[in-house]
Image (cartoon, rainbow, N blue to C red; front, side, top):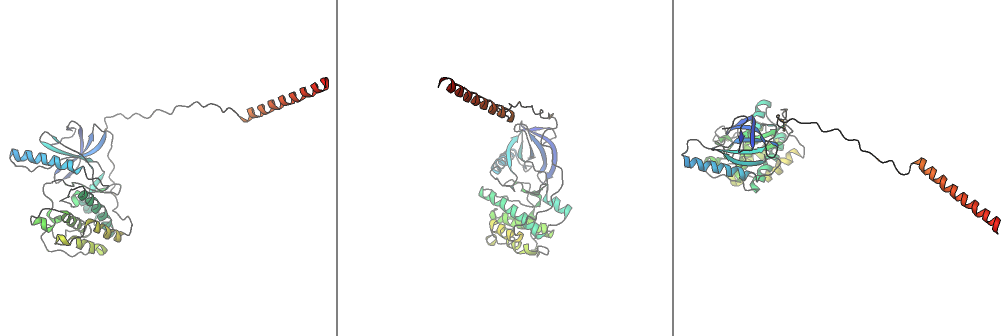
Length: 320
């Protein structure tokens, strides 16, 4: 387990807790090798297993973390590293001042259909990038979506096994035991956006109640209902949904109002930051020809020409 000030893997110093997810504490940490602030968390390993099974789960978690480094997208949290420290697997990611979408909705209320459509563009694009990299999210929900202080959107935990996804956002076929696929991620996207505009999950808290008809979704209703179809074969692809969301927003950037949490420092407080030295005066050479020098040179040349002309005239008078 991590403690404040501990160094994980001989490299990452845990500075302060910045959040708590279903898998445990998320830390603001400092990479002492690359000198940058990162986010760190201990990866989930199911408790109560026999030693051999636990060892297998630890190694599998580290492999999941390393696989997640393949996902590169502006709306996906970049995973930098995954390693084992003693009996604990750890994940190290980019640090983004933000708050979870679930917390934002609790504090600030629901999103408008246009805001949710804009959010859907970012989320669907990030999930598509993960699918192209060969990874499924498998557990998209408001708790693993970050709304950044600068107005951006970041998906976390792509391809990372947690302590059990919220059933309210899982596709019906997953609840029946079918392995996850691209269509299951599409359903979770629809359920997440539904929650954002309606305030409740589409199929109830357990994911098994009858579908509740949207009441606040407005022009987003059609796109949501397609994503929430029970038959996975009839759901649209993520990029088809992006097209539908773009038609709703019509190119307008109608995201949520960013939270105003202060950005954390990116330089360790123990370092003394010296001010830069004052600029040194640079000696400059005077130009070779100033206006005064130019006039002096012209007068000198004219004097020499006059003297030469007078000399020639005297020579002609005396000798010719």
